[in-house]
Length: 523
Image (cartoon, rainbow, N blue to C red):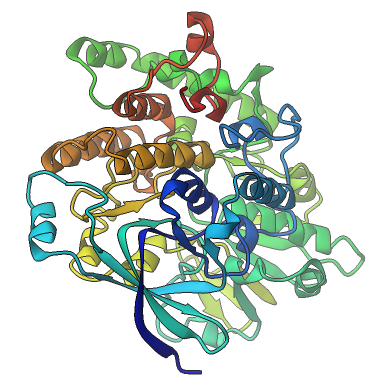
């Protein structure tokens, strides 16, 4: 049905696109401005609501995934909560702080246009001052489609906060040579995004008794393999084959040789070993001298994983150091039954850099073939394309740099895009924690409790972070700050006028992990 246009433009100071974790955090922190939140679906939760499988669980302990003023009921429970428990937690938070009243559900932002003055736009594209987030007049207008008739209503805002995230909505699809795409395949091809929309019965029917090939070896692919093995336990069960281009380190739990994992990367003393922005000469030299210790810690963890898990037996031991996966937020927690199912032959593995379809399955460069009735694509999402399709030019072209990375100051402000903030695009080991802290920073910036540096200084700071990521991991395009996350939070706190060292004493400061609880509002 064609969209119907309503000409009247509704004005509010602050607009937020998306009601996932970042969106509800932004709505809570910016509630003084009665923000309008557009959520394309009928529920909050983002990827936890719309991209989760039956078996999907949190990848971190509860205490690493909570808002600073809303602890989990059983925060010391060592088990990883299911996606349903996470959704219940997020709904509890939204109800506790009355966030739901700001959200317009089933309201999809379909277009954004810039209506600020040309001088402001030009000033943002050359070195100079970024300016205030709230200017007293509209800067952005958003077209929002809602209702069965898909009526389009325009809204105007002084500040627009984009929280649609990197995952979901736009699947990343592989390209194939001519006549070797899915059109020649006689079976079923489905992306993980579409699989996540199936209920348990439909998912079982898709997998049960079928030869399944799963493309990928990150968390979604690993969960899919587990569900496939579970569906094929009967006498007619078939093995599933994981087709792997790049191996990544996986861990069975947050314990390494009996030591808690946080000791290696999540304390101030452990992150002291790693590079971070704005180090003085002596600290830079010290960091260089300590590089053997960084490598030793990575080797120590690798030794445990190769002892604990049959990685060599199945050809799943990565060639790169563990720290590179941690530094790019690609470390995955394994389901309990993953390798036991592999031992029984229910999960098979095939290394391949290139593959394509034939009518009975998929074929590889070495001319070998895997027969398949179903091919599941756990090939990720194209969050940048999703964002670029929404923004107008020239901002759509500016949103990523030549390396394909979003250059965001404090993970939030693009120096060349005025009066717009982005939350949820730079990753850490706890995305909820970093999203909340950035939203607190954003709210204080909107209140003009501090000023941003010049555009030139912001670009310089972003460049320093990028360079550290490049030196730390070959997967730097993931844009993850996990090895210097505490320093990142320190700098945010300092800009807000908060103390950067948040613990009660120096022993805790050095050796206990930092969590959201450390960043409660200062009285």
